[in-house]
Image 1 (cartoon, rainbow, N blue to C red):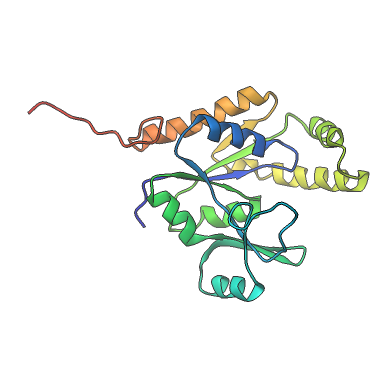
Image 2: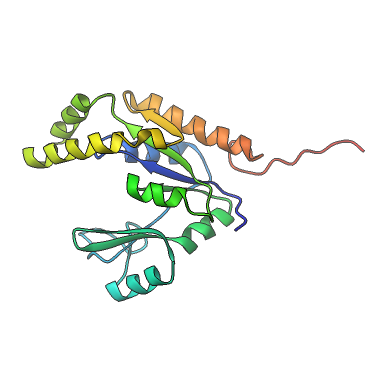
Length: 205
């Protein structure tokens, strides 16, 4: 499948700030897109179809799953979530670099997909102690939820070595700079300028 854009897999434990990092990077670098997943769960207040998720019925999701229309899919708390193969391919073929915000299990599946050659990035906290401080600072989770998030974070960080790049989100500005550097380097590697346009070398004849 010929593509002109680059697929990126982005994973991190909950509370590490990957969404904040990616938002700033997308504001600073043109030609980046975020993949919108399909889900069978009901929209929450303020969520718009096609923006937060593509909200579909279980029947529609099952049909897409059975026809290999998802790069990866999972069942979470009784609802299905999946990444559309065609939607990602269309974005890549339009020259956009596409980011998938995905867990380590989904990342392992996509990394082995023959249709894509993803670049994988893992965002980690400076320490679990700092992650706990940040989670408690949000003031939105119970002690039980925080304990579970920290337990899951420890497991996810064990998988960090399977990723091509590791970003430690100690200082936000530094983490943003590192991610931007990865994108620009990858574009240079594929003969593109930092803004994503193709490089055309002209020589005298």
